[in-house]
Length: 318
Ligand code: FAD
Ligand code: NDP
Image (cartoon, rainbow, N blue to C red):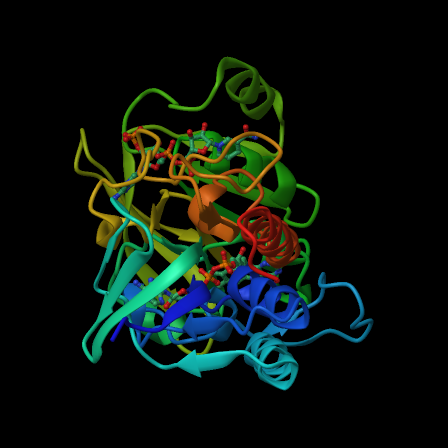
């Protein structure tokens, strides 16, 4: 007897995965989602489960807590007919169709796969970080920068890439000063971004400088830094500490079966969610290192579902 073949398996459960689920369920594709169990160190529901208030997702003028937004997305996906398994996908076989998806409980087959496994912001795990995470420490300036606790206060950004320069520049709208901590004597960012950052009078770049401790009791009040050339150490007064030291896309389980870029993100054909394997689509942060927002993840999750539906109907599945 041949094994049951799913029309679409969605891997990942952030805004991209749930939007893909809502669209494919409404298209009668009866999607099966693996939402993960602390996959990539993040709870099912994705990165927004690790934050407090979301103020920039349209439709919620008063804002709402990140976990509530994800509960609502999950309920909507289930209401539309998505089946959700709280399991992490260990591996996939994309070499032949139907594709195979492997979890601890078994093997599943699918005509199409939507990858929405997101990315995890890298952290430094400094002394004091655990206690002060989301109490002044964040990994997303665009998400948290406008919060009242950062207004007209000194802020610290760590990193020397495009994200760090972009976030430092963005934070000058809110903070009194932005200290940019760079561990070497060069910025990795593009030339244009470097020039803009260096020309901004509110940004103070500290070369050869590393953070060694997050200081504060209930909220962050400072960051202890160390010059890695001279060994000199001081505490910079700060209400905010923003990590911009890169993200880790959750793509290891794909084991090189899809084209990834040099930093491990899934490559999609520009303007689409198509990957290098026919029938496999990707949405959200796992294929986006520029925008990284809930709404862009939802948007590309929608694209992935619409493209999977089109792919299936061309194959005669309705
Ligand atoms: P993610 O949210 O990354 O979710 C992916 C999910 O897939 C995770 O649950 C993961 O466990 C699961 N998964 C991974 N691997 C597997 C596997 N092998 N098998 C099964 N499941 C797997 N954006 C905004 O627009 N506004 C904000 O205010 C905002 N605040 C933020 C605050 C913080 C602290 C952070 C970290 C991010 C914030 N963002 C915000 C960014 C936003 O969270 C992301 O852009 C968005 O969540 C990306 O969605 P996604 O669907 O691509 O994946
Ligand atoms: P990058 O990997 O490019 O840069 C990370 C930065 O963090 C580097 O300066 C690195 O230092 C520093 N860093 C890493 N680990 C540590 C650590 N433990 N302690 C201190 N510093 C550390 O990441 P980005 O997120 O900036 O960018 C990722 C990609 O996305 C890039 O390709 C970038 O061009 C792109 N991007 C493009 C944007 C745009 O076009 N507008 C906006 C944002 C990102 P070092 O240099 O010493 O290694």
